[in-house]
Length: 344
Ligand SMILES: Nc1ncnc2c1ncn2[C@@H]1O[C@H](COP(=O)(O)OP(=O)(O)OP(=O)(O)O)[C@@H](O)[C@H]1O
Image 1 (cartoon, rainbow, N blue to C red):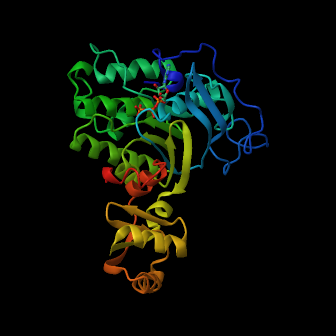
Image 2 (image 1 turned 60 degrees about the vertical axis):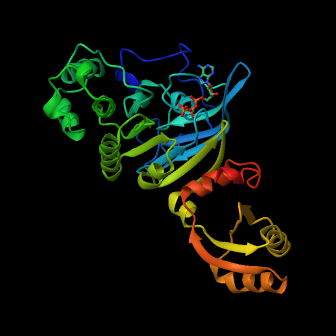
Image 3 (image 1 turned 135 degrees about the vertical axis):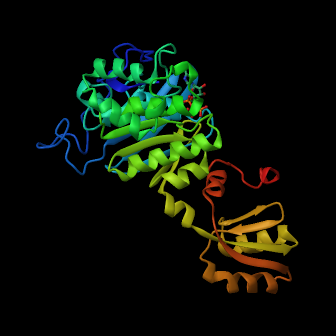
């Protein structure tokens, strides 16, 4: 867990790693009259270019580019081990990248003036178990020079006021996570970075956390969160970056991803149908089990039907569908989608 500048217990595997990771290229960084480091109001809050992190032979993050714009809720989506936490740890100054350019709020990650405007929860919250939630927050507030009145405010925000006097060790996982978010919000940050905030929570805990994140987003704050849950990102985020094996494989508005329509066809023999349609439409045609999925405008349904019928193929079903983010992710992270057809 990281609180940016207000934690006494940050996890740093490269001491002094912060601050020296930018080249000063910064699209939003150089001009006068901005918020932090001369950053203008409309400049991206997070700018990452060619970010790479290597651990020995493991390439945890591989040439990642990422822009997070002010006021958006950005979802960083990927399976376990994709490189999400490593990227977020770099953005919060906990570790240094091997190479690449990183600017956060117009400055370098980990710079005091950047940390003062960033709240983060990376991995599991780490609090003193024998202290109450309130006392844990008091310690952090003192460390970060935050007025005590703010503590009550953040406890209300995360709906923990009633349990604030109880020991941290008695909290449920959901409450622990919410206290983590409360700590991240202590400094009233412009940018909130949350690593898998619903991880390990039961359905009620997930619901509460999502509600909280929505509130943060609608409050004008910029939120960057990671998740391996497609539905979650779909519900919460404006834009999503999809990362797999360290590489960013797509970055889209959620609506763009979800909104892409396709035709779903059942036809026999299905292999022949795929060959015929690929001959006409190219590699937008995919066969999963015995179902063909074609990424074309649904208005081409009649044409597709005619092509198949003229080739002597019997069409038993032809409909258009909006792709779920899950389908998009599956496709993007599958090198040969037909080989993996059995998984569907
Ligand atoms: N300190 C480290 N030393 C060696 N390898 C590491 C270290 N931290 C991460 N890795 C490796 O880097 C890769 C990316 O890990 P990372 O934790 O960033 O993935 P993730 O997308 O956050 O996964 P998860 O959802 O499981 O947390 C993995 O192969 C991981 O084993």
